[in-house]
Length: 71
Image 1: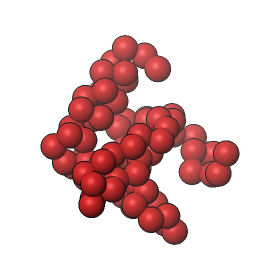
Image 2: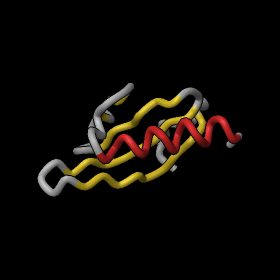
Image 3: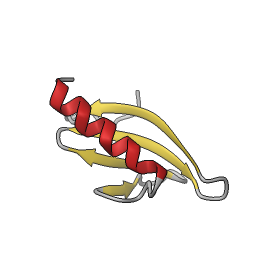
Image 4: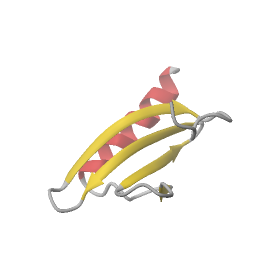
């Protein structure tokens, strides 16, 4: 990940403190409380627990044809 992309992704993660659903966020189909946020060519996959106000970043992956497939 280049410097510019790293700064953009880092800034997006920082906004999770205020509102994890701000920006281009969608809920992942068939998964409870799991979402992805698009940041340019990168995707931040995270789980948001609204009861406990916790956000867990599961992975950060570059968008490719296999990005949304199970590992």
